[in-house]
Amino acid sequence: MRHTDTLVRLALAARAGGAAAVRVNDPEVVAATVAAVDLPVIGLWKDGDTGVFITPTVRHALALVDAGAAVVAADATARPRPDGGSFADLVEAVHAAGALVMADVSTYEEGRRAAEEGADFVASTLSGYVPGSPRQDGPDLRLVADLAVGAGVPVIAEGRITTPEQAADALAAGALSVVVGTAITAPTALTRRFVDGLPG
Image (cartoon, rainbow, N blue to C red; front, top):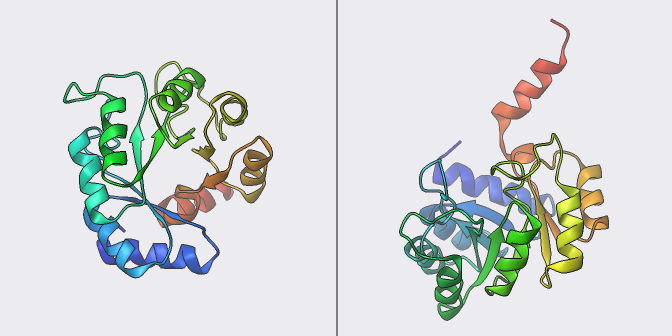
């Protein structure tokens, strides 16, 4: 599935289904999606698979803005960034380039700090994936609710949202909107879910 044309078609399918925006990985795919899909694009750039790897540096963030992302999603956890920079530096650079920033966090404290550092949105994306955050099967609705009350910026619910009911619960908890990923974009995972649910 990780081919630009395929990913653009997934974005078009999401738009046809009623999506209000799409979250897209990699500058090349962001640019192709912006050209083909008349929805706001939240861009991110996964570089690596350990530590801070979701849009880890200013360089990554500005490449996404150059590709046309309206919003740049970036890891805003307390972990060190690979280039020694800060999340605040990334926010400042993205704002100067004319785009908004979505802070992917794992805890309430990280969300508050990200908002204080200028993030336009905070998202529960990394809860359960970073040491110190709760591991659970479903979305972290407690984090969503806490951020909605105390972050001071709009909250995006993301992470392990697999049903419309969970999405509705996230909105009821105070989220402005919901990002649904694997539940609608990963045929392998969807197939495995059915296979695993059948008797041996």
